[in-house]
Length: 91
Image (cartoon, helix red, strand yellow):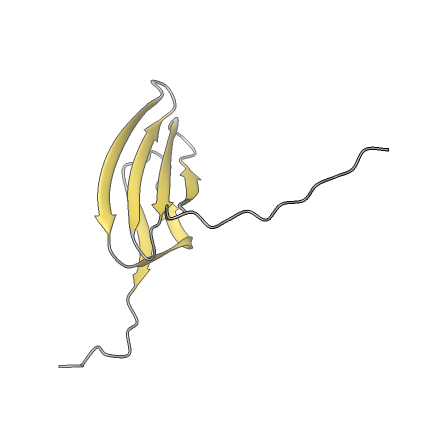
């Protein structure tokens, strides 16, 4: 019987990123939300026909991907971005 050695993984200094995609129904395109580090999010358009990427904007707030949607032809994107901070003053 072989012995199994379990080692603890040390935390890296690199921030983790998460990917989430919305597929357009009529176009061969995907809108990719790249989250990380922290509350930053990059919007990327992935063209599946040419396998190319078009980098969009960086949003420096929390984007709720589950409340977002893309139009069937991938021409429009609607997303929910929130910035709830306790130190924010109302004017």
